[in-house]
Each structure stands twice: as C-alpha cells, then as structure tokens.
Image 1: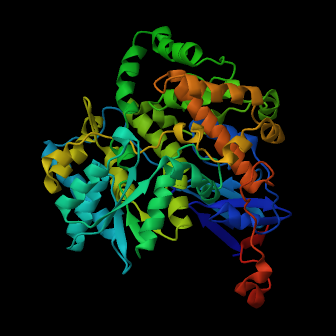
Image 2 (image 1 turned 90 degrees about the horizontal axis):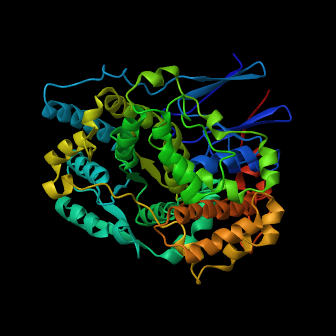
Length: 535
C-alpha cells in the first residue's frame, strides 16, 4: 500500500520526532538522529523556547529546534502518496461533573484500585532482565516497591537519592525506613550542590532542550548507578500525583475556585497583585486568566510565576520574533473539558503538559535511555489511568488529604507511618548551586553580555539585575522565587544553544553528530541508519 504509520504511546512515555526537509520525511526517537542525517541545520525555534518559559517543560508538538516537531502522545501519523496526516487515536476522558463513579464504601474502591494496580505491576515485571525500583520514601514509589516485591515473590532492590543540604527535600531517612520494612537492598546515590551544576550539561545533552528542573540531574545519576549495578529496568511511582491529585496546587485551587463565585474581580485580584506588585515586570504579555480550554486550572498560577520573568528578561528583538505568539494557543483542550469537575480539569492538563513535557522527558525517558536503562511506570498503565479518571474527586482529594484512595491501598501493604506520609516534592533548589562562589566558569560565560548578545534572546542588563537580586533577596521572597526560575531558564537556554547550535558561548564541548564513515554499519550499508521516506 506504500503507506507508513508512525504512532506514539497514549501518555507520552517515549518520544517520536520528525522533520520534513528537501522532499524527505525523517523520524527518530531522538532529535540527535535527525541532526545526524546532515539534512537539518540546528536552529532555535523561538516559539518552542517561549513555550518552555511559560510551562517550564518541553512543548507538546514543537521542539526547541526550528523545523523539528514532536508527535503528541495518543496520536499517529499516516504517510501516503507524499502526504502526512496526524490524528488522535486516544484521549483521556473524565465523566461529566456529578456523573463520576462512586462506591458503596471506601474499602471496595481501594480494593478495585489495588486490583488494577497489581495487574499493571505484573505486566511491568515481564521479561528476564535485572530490575530495581526507584524510591523516594514517599507513598507512590513505596507502594510500587511493596506490590512488585509481593508479585515477584522476593524483595526487589531499590535505589534512592540523597540531596545534600536540601533540608526537608532530602528523603533518605524515609527511603531507608521503607526499604528496611520491605526487606529491599537499598542503594543511596548522594548528590551534592556541585553535582547539580557539574552534571547539568549532561541533562541538556540528553534532553535535547532547555531544562529548568535541576533535580533531573539526580534522576540521571540515579539511572547511571542503576545501570552500573547491572540493572536494565527500573520501576517508579511516576503518575500517581497526576492520577490521584498529589500536588499541593490542587489544594490551593480549592480557595481560588470558591472565589469565582463572588465575581471576576475578587477571583483575579490575588493573581494580579502577586504578578504585578510582588514580582513586577508589567502585564503586556500576560496569558488570559482562563488560559486552557476556557477554564483556569490549578497549575496556571505556577505557570504565570514562571512566565512573568519574561517581561524583564526578553529582549525587544525576542518579542518581535515571537510576533504575538502565545504558548497557550498551542494547548489543545476538548470542549467537554468545561463539563468536568475543576479538579479533573487540572488533572487532565497535568497529563497533557507536565507529564510528556518534563516527567517523561528530561526526568524520564531522556535520563533512563541516556544511561542505557528503561523506566517502567505502573501508575501510567492505561487501565490505572482510566480507573483514576472515572472515580469521583473525593477519592483523590478528600478535604486536605491527597491521594486518599492510594493511602487506603497503602494501608494494606505498608505500615501506618509510611501509608500516612505527606507529599514531599523531589526537587533541587533552582538557584543556590548556580550562584555560589564555587560555580564553574561556564555559568558566568553563558551569562556574559557577549554570549547573551550572540543568541539575542535575553537582555544583558536584565540578566545582571536578576543575578544581583539572587544575592540580596531572601529565598522566601516571591520575586526571588520567580526570578530564580527565570534565570535558571536563561542558563538552560544558553547552554542548550551552545551545545546544539554552533557553540562559542562557553568553554564546554558541543554536541557533534557522529562520523558515519567510522561506524561498522556504514561499511555494510553505505548509508545513514535513519528512518526516511520521500514525501
């Protein structure tokens, strides 16, 4: 039939990139594969970069490279007779508000969740390969460790990260307690502030895009340690927070949603005050209040804090090149979204934006594959995801208790102190390591006026102002928090540009495509091993 189908998994665990150039369609699981063809010159797509500064993750359909695109999760491409069409084959659906599934009692609901979760774990234990489980000591990963050990009939080895000098974010003691209870041999990977800086370039090389979250360094080092121990596969707890409302902003949203009932001014006043007065920078490019599908989700205030830094940091030329582009225009939402409960609206957007753009990208597939390992995610099993979507919101967030139903499951396999643990987000401080006197020279080189002028994205005076702000403002300051995020975005973008778009900004090496003539395959095939067809 001379027809080619390209498809991506439902959630976006694995990437698929493509480009059309000189009458050819190229595709690859890594952008490096496209660049290695020699047909694509790496140039920045300012819209893809602006998307990153709005949502602090990689775009759904764009990439940071001009002319290189990402096939969205749950979509397939059909190529026939020189034409490519892209269609959605699956989308997460929630019941209309009030029509969600309820149970006679909470125990029956927990029993059904445990059944589908155990089945998901069993499916991910298939294959005779050495495997482990990543744990943070929190609820999600410890439940997976407990269930997988039970299903396998023996304790599974576990790996955790200890973030030095990170205060409450360091969950080493909790991980040790969980592993001890379950009889798992625990390996701890210690990550220092210096490690965050020194290995950050590796994250950019692996992610092929700017990355804001420096804790991705931790997951990269964790994957390397897992591989060094002889393991090929790692089970993780990713996806529980999206399916069962584990993030703190879902709780904040309760107050905001109640404010909607008292009129537009009252509901918008806290947001406008925080952005205009506590952070500053103007409102010329502020996104609409109801920014995604005509609704306001719980995450949007965090996105707006990130995006507000653009008002100060972007050059006039950058705004001119964007030409009125809004990253929110790239977010697709079904019309039925408006009929869902507000919590489910927010959960849907987590699956659409943060899951494929960060958690399954720089923090997931890119870290694991870059280290020759594979991540498997029971909470992202289609049956688990669809079950969580079907149930009423009070099974996910009950008053101030997040992941309520999962805690009921945990009580069956874990001791009460572990089952009742509160959420602690795995994160590494955004600014401290990069502002310390011990920072490497390449940080200052990337932020020098010469390097900033070379890329043209960021105003040198504004960047210097932000760096001085880091020195004089307390960490608890909202303005400091927003500018930490903005400045980290500048460093990541400059580093990505240096790595992939010609170098010349700092002393670090650049990524160069391999010399195909030096590979063993070249001698047999006399052609690049790259998927291409004429269009």
